[in-house]
Image 1 (cartoon, each protein chain N blue to C red):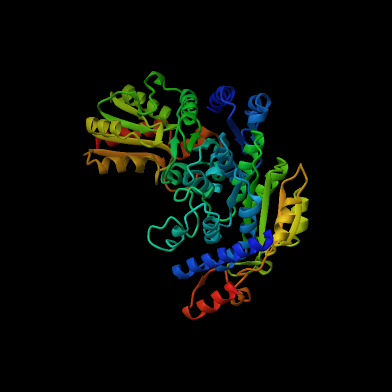
Image 2 (image 1 turned 60 degrees about the vertical axis):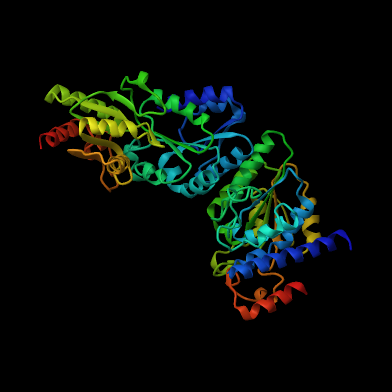
Length: 305
Length: 261
């Protein structure tokens, strides 16, 4: 995922000398190809995220297009006021890219988990929020961010391809898989989970589930959500994020405000808790019930109810 | 009347306009606005060239910036009358969206300096001769982001950045030295690799001379303007908590007399 971002940035920096890459000393060596090739367009701002975000607004005002990169948890929570006031209130042409979002930094502990970034940023005016699910989307969305004149936030966590690239359209949620028995709605790192769950549901229980990838959290494209909810009547949301203010709440709001009747609405995500677990990414997902196996079992039980 | 005398006269008028705005509103940030009136007068009537940028990081003193804008004819004087009224373009903290003469919307302290660093870096990279003047407060210097910005400015040798500290020694609930001391401020700023000078922040000639005498080509500049909170209104100058005042109608005339003298 991060390599796709670096690849996209390399292309962008080469084509537009007014694009700047600001780094909050994150990513270890992944920025080396950029820092060595684009010396005048790259700044490591040091471990000072708040200053980096506002410096970016000054650069934007002087005609540059700055992209900032930092670990999601550190930039969104520490520099939240800078994002709200300096970037969004001032409509600065700044692109904030977060690395390691969701539970990516599994054993680094809750200080390093970005499991509330969607909740806290979704309510800030003037901000576009991208949540790519695979390297292809990272590539596309980084380039899309450049086209938007104004604040953009992109969260990069884990992710892998569901081979639905050909369906990608920045203005629409991606229908990863069609289905009639229900719909799994997911974003970012849970798109691959949703896809795997749909396969298990079919293989084990002959249930044919649709999978919808909400790659853009804001502005959210709600038509496809309403349509698929009406068509399948059952919605299951999966997110590697707090459900409070996360995709669960976003989707349920759309369902309720559009008066869509559902026979089932259920969400899998982080349930108002910090995720403490010292082990692998797979291990932490297992502890917090975000594995393909667990989710498919629960969905099956829910459908039978 | 020489140039400095003329600016002194303008400054007095700027203060009277701001005073009347605050009176009409029924109160506001008198202290920190009147401590920086001479600084703004010096900047807008002498230092700033058309292309230069001014960032009011201590935006709670926006009222004095509005009256300076009006004196400089950047905005129409009539607009000043709307201050404190419903739907006014002039807020307690100046907003770029409402008034585009305001370079950057500030309000929460400790933001304007980082923005100024970005501007300074941008113009420097573009090799455009633009100078950035950023006014910060002493209470504001307690914010950690100010020190991040100071590190950044020096590291990137932002020689087109002029930080002006309105050092009025007071903050909302008391004296800076009692709450979170900045001293020894000169040692701190010099050790951060700034070209440092200090002046009497109420002496327009001293402010202008010191700003023009900065000559280090590798360092950002820092001017400590020693000021008195509420300067010009004797009653406020001596008052301990003059950060935000709600006016007692009985003292308005007394205040105004101080200003017009």
